[in-house]
Structure formats: C-alpha cells, structure tokens
Length: 306
Image (cartoon, rainbow, N blue to C red; front, side):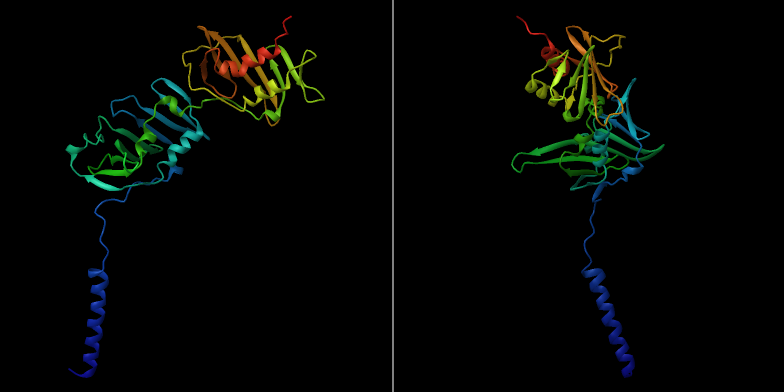
C-alpha cells in the first residue's frame, strides 16, 4: 500500500469512528412513550362534545355560532359564556405527559379511562373529528401537595399520567358553561334610573333625586357599586315569561346602545329575575339578587314614616 492509500485509509477510519461516536455510542436515548397527549390548534375547533360520566351519560355539546358559542344538552339550549369556552380551549392547546403507566386494556377501568366511566372529550372541526380523549381519576399526594391525572387517547391502549388535575376542566355539566351575569356596569357611567314608573336623576350637585326628594348619597353610592357585577348561578329554565313584571328597573348609562333592563316576577315566595343582557331566567329569594337590584332601591325610595 502506497502512502496515498494509507492516508486515505486513515481518513476513512477516522471519519467512520466519528460517525460511530455520533450516531451509536452518543446517540440520545429515545423516549419510549409520547411526550404530549394532546396538542391542538384551537383556532380550527368549532364543536366540542363532553361526556362527563362515560359514553352512556347525557352529553353536553358546545358549538360555535358566529362570534359566540351555543350550548346544548338534551332539549335545553343556551348561550355559552365566551370566557369559559376560551378557558376550556386553552386547556387543549398542550397537554404534556409525565409517565406511561400501562399498555394493558384490562387496566383501563382501574384508572377510570374506559368508555363506561371516563370523562370523554370529542373535539371537531366541522364534521371532522380532531381528537377523542378519555380522562380518568386523579390522585392527590398529601406529602408533596401534588396531583396526578390519568388519560388516554380513545384509539390507543396506552394510559398516561399527567401533572395536575387536567380532567377536571372537562368534568362539567350544562350550567357550568352558561353566562351567569345579570348585570355588569360602571357606576360612574350611570346617568338615569327608572324603577317601575318612578324616575331617578342626577341634579346639578351630583345628587340622586326622585320626585324632588334627594336620596341618601352614601346609601345610593353603595347601591350603585353593588351593580358593578351581579351574578347568579340558579337558573329557572322552566319559567314562562309573563307580560307584566312585578318589578322593573331601567338604567341609562354612557357607552350603552340601549338601556339596561332588569325585570322580576314573583313566584312561589321568591322571584324570577331576567336581564336584557342575558337570555337566561334566574331564581332569587327576597334576600339575594332581588334585594341587591330592587330591594335596596325600593327601600331608599320609600317615603319616610312619621
């Protein structure tokens, strides 16, 4: 072998040794399970179906309509709270896995990721199913103050452990996604109020006056501050609206295209309350939302007793 051939051979074996070191000896170990259970481009999602108690449970469907979302369960329909849907979609953007715990189908029931007991989530774009996930039970470690959830993709047997309580985001019923706001208004924007047929207005001294009588400024300020955000979680879906409410409040405020109107109907010792800002009917006793919206104002406007 001449010197040229020897040099070429040395170069060849040197390069081959480098390749061995790079691709075999120092090759990083490949992960034996998927690192991400779910990663969805939520901009394409326009339909979500939730089975909170297994495939045989009554499901909740969220469907995008225009700029909002519509909610349905059985024959009930309502507008969904956009912020609650946004939070739900946000939980689907990325769900990393922590550990592969089992590949055996017989273990699915133990981790509650089977069809019968799991929380099933179906995500669609149009009529195309993007993904179907089953979330199961979760464990809380008191010593480390940490929690672990279990889940699997419905077309795979692998069961994964996840950090946190991921499945609880999807363990929700119909009312959990509804708009619970009766009223949201900045008190400084309020310029006029009508309670039933009695009008309240601000005079030149920034005092609220009705029928020529000034109302207590402190009480009125507390009342208006209570209207910043009024929520109620008790719905009256069975209520049929009557023509004339027992109580009616209209609020005129800056930056509003129409007056805010809140009506109350007496029913069964309590009230059913409805706002022009929300399609839902809410129930209230005499001390709840009714008192905050109507009762306080009614008491302030009552003529003094001698």
